[in-house]
Length: 375
Image (tube, rainbow, N blue to C red; front, side):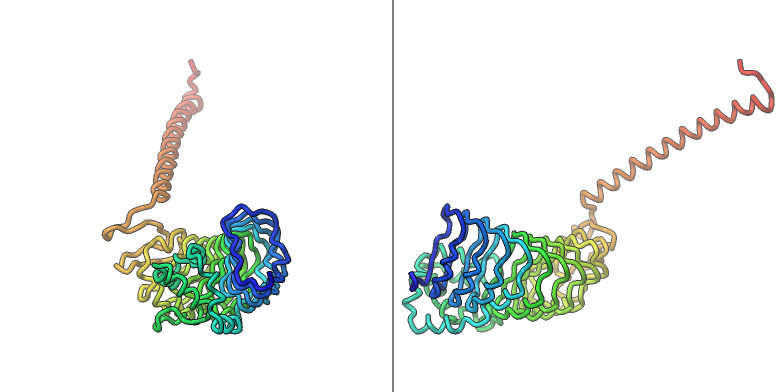
């Protein structure tokens, strides 16, 4: 089937491995095998698909490493590998994917009818759009009718703008979703070359090392690197993400102070650095960060935080504010109760010990000074 443009086999009960022969479908533009029971590795032959725009393999049991050949997929803008068992490091070659989809877009513009089969099922299109993230929620909001659904995705597959003229992401609406795998090692610095993506999801893996400063070169609207083991300081260059609206770095091992460049992120509507216990210093109170609640800074005992209403949080506190009053959390209350019990027990022991010493002294006095025999 060498002329096939779309292969949609999602949400079935297929098992076994992905056939390497899929690499012979050189005209393929959309491959959706998500939510099956596929296992084994992603075949390196996937790198032969230079016209591939969308690859959906989420919700399977795929293992092994992400093939470095995926970087040869120069048209690949939408990649979803969420919820598998992929391991190893993110290959630096992956930064090459989606770097030049213009030739594929040109083919579709010359013959729009070729893409009718790709967008004939709007349920599939809804599965492709990560609507819970900024910009993409706007895309889905326009898909109220079947006609709109087909029109919008036809425009996307032909490389036309669909976002408002005010959006800086009109030419960068791709995504890379790698959440919920077993990926390890450091995020490659080459990721800074992925200029066509606006959504990067790396959460729920085993990534370590530093967050590369090159990430500030992207046109991201959403970045989620939570629930990993990333360490070191949050790079100053992250302040260059001027379009970012959602930033989640929670549950890692970041240290040092929050970079002052975060003050430039005026579009942030979601921000989370909680449970990075080595973060220190003060949260800037004169920028967008001051608008977030204590939930964005939970488990960061060395951070000094002040809400937009001016309520301070002590550096060593983890309480919360309500109507201007600070209340302890359950953890604080538990510590207070334990401290009281320990203090009470120590006081009781000391009192009993004093009585024993007093009686001992009386007995010794009678034996030594008065030489009175015990009766």
